[in-house]
Length: 153
Image (cartoon, rainbow, N blue to C red; front, side, top):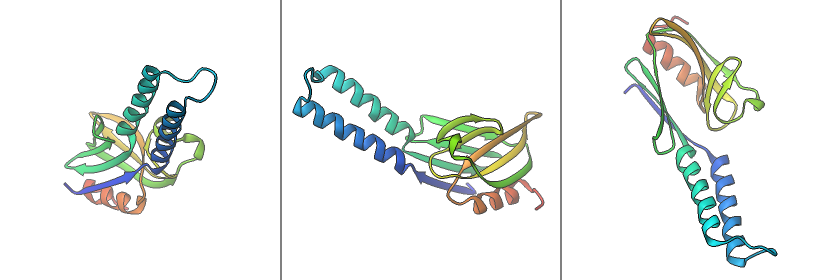
């Protein structure tokens, strides 16, 4: 393994934590004229826990000719097989592109926090592709990708 970096999605952790706390207090105190019953409370709480487990972190790995993008506990794993690297550049994504897994006009975006990313254009199985990968250290990821795949600066 050449590179491995994990980022924590603090925004998601805060949102899910606050929502679960609110749900728990609303259920325990039986707020309102029609308080939430036990089964719907458990289903909603379980949904938020599943979302949390799927997206609380993002791990980027470079292994051989692959860039692996792994979300949360690893059920969502994107493997980019890079036959030839065409270009790599650090970019700042617009805030409206959002967080998570997104389709954008410039290709797929995989991120979990912040606006820093690396745009990667590559060839895989004869097809030209473009992705953006969010990272807290775009300079380092850009440099390692260039070194690993022999792209001249």
